Length: 528
Image (cartoon, rainbow, N blue to C red; front, side):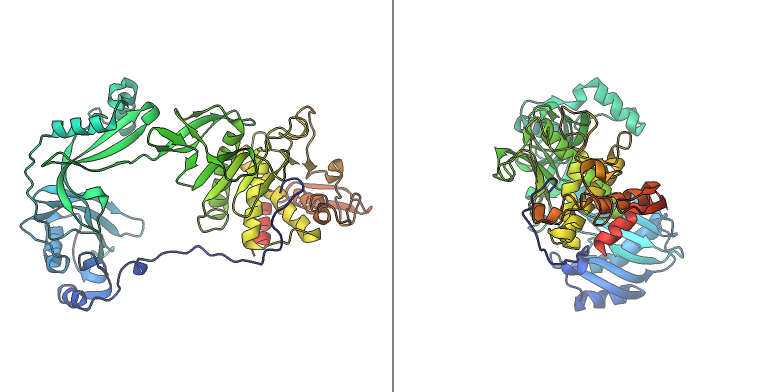
């Protein structure tokens, strides 16, 4: 809660660790028959992971072969031949083409090979060879597709396939018809021959992109680059025998939207193109922004727009852009993935009522909600420090579970004030300050704020434990929004430094250590 209310209190201490789903979770680790074959072919086997899909390896590690220079095709071909029985490679039909060859900082070389069946590339089928600095192949991994038996002579032309795809896509503005986009493509990749115009290519690909069912067919694959309301890179796979559309998808699901915010002018953020409509959904960060339509029915309606220029709901733009900045701060500075550090989806509702009040914002335990303000006490309660404040309540819930009452509740609030302010300095350094909520508090009064971290007394808060304005009653959960001033001021002094006399008449002089060190201390206090 930014102002005075809380819907969650008394959470137990929770400890979260990022869970890494290892390959072992998906594939059986010991296939006796495969291991026997591998041990006959390779020098030394340390680990073999097999695929239940084709009964071949997806990874073999050890010292597989020695004196193999991955830069030399003849030596690579010999290793592939050595591996053919293990991976069920049919030398007469299955060939491999270099996609990428890279040497890393440890001296290892990595060679990615595209599988071609009868000289037609197989969608999603590849092997990757890894060698150490001594030219020993130490791993081969990938998803190879064996056992194909397909006629690779198309019955329909590439042009016919393109016409089928264009008809299915419907009316659109094509990027290759935009000379500016064509020139930009050439400029970015330093290649004058590049064009957005579709170039259908023959592939062997599974229907509906379902690699598990493995119903592979010969298909014309193409990318249709679209501008305007349908912006995207639409991948089409057209059956090269009968013209069926066997698969299609937009490979550019995240679009960059532009919107008008209340407090930061015109801003950009990720959105999601669903059909011909843009959603306020950042699929990369898992951020969804809704409108509660001036109600308490959360989350409400996922916000959408027809042209990805968001000018109708400035509060929602504040929230969506703000959560993006908050997410990036926690990830980039503390390697924290969402509020639970495990990639949880982040939902927020703009235009919300909170206990019947528009002058508030809150973390509900599952999402955030932000009021529109009454125009007098608050304008839209969606400034970047408030967005960071509410998100940090979620972090606090998942880390130390500070009970939202009395002094622990004041610590809960101060952690949100601290990180809301830190995030403001991180996201908008040119205008950040040590006030809380100043952009939306009393819009008709210039220069004031809800709370003042650099001078708590100015906001009727104590700057010292049991100092002036200290609250000891039962209101506001025991003064959580008042007594938070003590640690707010302590954090300010730790960061900036200062001297003077505190509420209790004691003189002090503090040398600041800077915001990078102080925020690390605060985060460690919150999480450990």
